[in-house]
Image (spheres, rainbow, N blue to C red):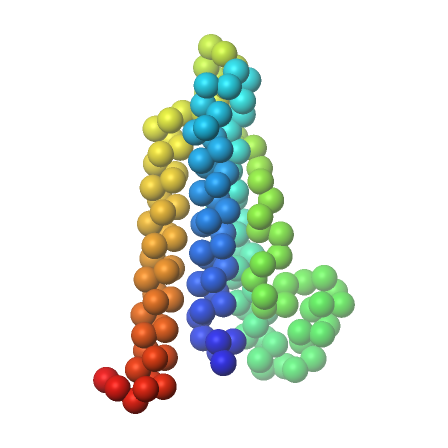
Length: 140
Protein backbone atom coordinates (compact mmCIF):
# COMPACT_ATOMS: atom_id res chain seq x y z
CA UNK A 1 0.00 0.00 0.00
CA UNK A 2 2.82 2.42 0.86
CA UNK A 3 4.88 1.48 -2.21
CA UNK A 4 2.85 3.85 -4.38
CA UNK A 5 3.21 6.75 -1.94
CA UNK A 6 6.16 8.86 -0.80
CA UNK A 7 6.30 7.19 2.61
CA UNK A 8 9.28 4.90 1.70
CA UNK A 9 11.13 7.92 0.31
CA UNK A 10 10.43 9.95 3.44
CA UNK A 11 11.50 6.99 5.56
CA UNK A 12 14.89 7.01 3.81
CA UNK A 13 15.25 10.75 4.44
CA UNK A 14 14.45 10.27 8.13
CA UNK A 15 16.93 7.38 8.40
CA UNK A 16 19.64 9.41 6.68
CA UNK A 17 19.14 12.53 8.79
CA UNK A 18 19.10 10.42 11.95
CA UNK A 19 22.39 8.76 11.00
CA UNK A 20 23.92 12.09 10.01
CA UNK A 21 22.88 13.62 13.31
CA UNK A 22 24.85 10.92 15.13
CA UNK A 23 27.96 11.62 13.06
CA UNK A 24 27.70 15.40 13.57
CA UNK A 25 27.09 14.95 17.30
CA UNK A 26 30.23 12.80 17.40
CA UNK A 27 32.16 15.70 15.86
CA UNK A 28 30.99 18.01 18.63
CA UNK A 29 31.75 15.40 21.28
CA UNK A 30 35.33 15.19 19.99
CA UNK A 31 35.85 18.92 19.57
CA UNK A 32 38.60 18.95 22.21
CA UNK A 33 40.28 15.76 20.99
CA UNK A 34 43.71 16.65 19.58
CA UNK A 35 44.15 15.56 15.98
CA UNK A 36 40.47 14.66 15.48
CA UNK A 37 39.24 15.14 11.91
CA UNK A 38 35.57 15.98 11.48
CA UNK A 39 33.38 13.48 9.67
CA UNK A 40 30.09 13.76 7.84
CA UNK A 41 27.72 11.82 5.62
CA UNK A 42 27.54 13.08 2.06
CA UNK A 43 24.21 14.83 1.54
CA UNK A 44 24.90 15.15 -2.18
CA UNK A 45 25.60 11.43 -2.52
CA UNK A 46 22.42 10.60 -0.59
CA UNK A 47 20.32 12.88 -2.76
CA UNK A 48 21.85 11.48 -5.95
CA UNK A 49 21.22 7.90 -4.87
CA UNK A 50 17.71 8.73 -3.75
CA UNK A 51 16.98 10.32 -7.13
CA UNK A 52 18.41 7.25 -8.87
CA UNK A 53 16.19 5.01 -6.74
CA UNK A 54 13.11 7.09 -7.56
CA UNK A 55 13.96 6.99 -11.27
CA UNK A 56 14.55 3.23 -11.08
CA UNK A 57 11.22 2.78 -9.34
CA UNK A 58 9.44 4.70 -12.09
CA UNK A 59 11.19 2.66 -14.77
CA UNK A 60 10.41 -0.57 -12.94
CA UNK A 61 6.75 0.39 -12.87
CA UNK A 62 6.83 0.87 -16.64
CA UNK A 63 8.81 -2.31 -17.36
CA UNK A 64 8.28 -5.36 -15.12
CA UNK A 65 11.65 -6.87 -16.06
CA UNK A 66 13.59 -3.66 -15.29
CA UNK A 67 13.89 -4.35 -11.55
CA UNK A 68 15.24 -7.85 -12.13
CA UNK A 69 17.72 -6.63 -14.74
CA UNK A 70 18.80 -3.74 -12.49
CA UNK A 71 19.45 -6.10 -9.58
CA UNK A 72 21.48 -8.39 -11.79
CA UNK A 73 23.50 -5.42 -13.07
CA UNK A 74 24.00 -4.01 -9.55
CA UNK A 75 22.06 -0.79 -10.19
CA UNK A 76 19.60 0.91 -7.87
CA UNK A 77 16.30 -0.94 -7.78
CA UNK A 78 14.07 1.56 -6.06
CA UNK A 79 14.63 0.70 -2.41
CA UNK A 80 16.64 3.90 -1.95
CA UNK A 81 18.96 2.60 0.76
CA UNK A 82 22.02 1.56 -1.21
CA UNK A 83 25.29 2.72 0.33
CA UNK A 84 24.24 6.19 1.45
CA UNK A 85 25.48 5.64 4.97
CA UNK A 86 29.19 5.76 4.25
CA UNK A 87 30.93 8.20 6.53
CA UNK A 88 33.51 10.43 4.91
CA UNK A 89 36.08 12.78 6.23
CA UNK A 90 35.12 16.38 5.58
CA UNK A 91 37.35 18.35 3.25
CA UNK A 92 37.70 21.45 5.37
CA UNK A 93 41.13 22.98 5.09
CA UNK A 94 41.22 24.79 8.42
CA UNK A 95 43.41 23.15 11.02
CA UNK A 96 43.67 24.47 14.55
CA UNK A 97 46.80 24.59 16.68
CA UNK A 98 46.21 21.10 18.09
CA UNK A 99 45.74 19.63 14.57
CA UNK A 100 41.96 19.17 14.65
CA UNK A 101 39.54 20.72 12.15
CA UNK A 102 36.24 20.76 14.07
CA UNK A 103 34.54 24.14 14.20
CA UNK A 104 31.71 24.34 16.71
CA UNK A 105 29.88 26.94 14.62
CA UNK A 106 30.06 24.80 11.47
CA UNK A 107 28.89 21.69 13.30
CA UNK A 108 25.96 23.49 14.96
CA UNK A 109 24.95 24.96 11.60
CA UNK A 110 25.05 21.53 9.95
CA UNK A 111 23.07 19.96 12.81
CA UNK A 112 20.46 22.72 12.52
CA UNK A 113 20.10 22.20 8.76
CA UNK A 114 19.90 18.44 9.28
CA UNK A 115 17.24 18.90 11.98
CA UNK A 116 15.12 21.06 9.67
CA UNK A 117 15.28 18.40 6.94
CA UNK A 118 14.42 15.68 9.47
CA UNK A 119 11.43 17.60 10.84
CA UNK A 120 10.19 18.41 7.34
CA UNK A 121 10.20 14.73 6.35
CA UNK A 122 8.39 13.76 9.56
CA UNK A 123 5.79 16.50 9.08
CA UNK A 124 5.04 15.39 5.52
CA UNK A 125 4.90 11.74 6.59
CA UNK A 126 2.58 12.62 9.48
CA UNK A 127 0.23 14.52 7.17
CA UNK A 128 0.12 11.54 4.79
CA UNK A 129 -0.82 9.23 7.67
CA UNK A 130 -3.55 11.68 8.73
CA UNK A 131 -4.92 11.62 5.19
CA UNK A 132 -4.81 7.82 5.19
CA UNK A 133 -6.61 7.72 8.54
CA UNK A 134 -9.28 10.11 7.22
CA UNK A 135 -9.76 7.91 4.16
CA UNK A 136 -10.00 4.72 6.22
CA UNK A 137 -12.38 6.18 8.79
CA UNK A 138 -14.29 8.10 6.09
CA UNK A 139 -14.07 11.33 8.08
CA UNK A 140 -13.11 14.67 6.67
